Length: 158
Image (cartoon, rainbow, N blue to C red; front, side):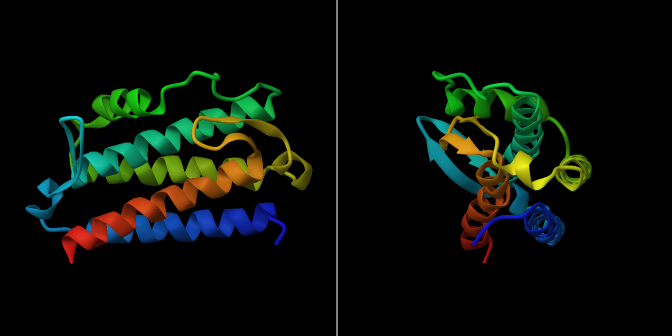
């Protein structure tokens, strides 16, 4: 199935709404439930939301870079180190502040997709996880990325 700007826009919009709804339903205690532990680094639910906020901003920068003719992420980009640094920047925010920021960033992403055309979806750049990929595939990864994390969170919360 060929991706269109409209298709990606609608999926991003729906994903954003589902993400916000999920986090709004959490109790105060649930925000501190551990989700991921790797190499001594523990992400609780609040850190996962911080990661989604940081990722949303990073995806927008990457998309703008590729639209402007850039190559995307550098070849030896360390996505794990980057993720950790980025969530540290936003982690001090409360869950409410993180949700407001996520909504703002998703609206900006939707605005960006809303002005793109079909040929721009075919531009190729480097994504740290996908490697060389079209903007369409990179944009689709935004909502797939969130879906994966929400699936993991739902297993812990329910």
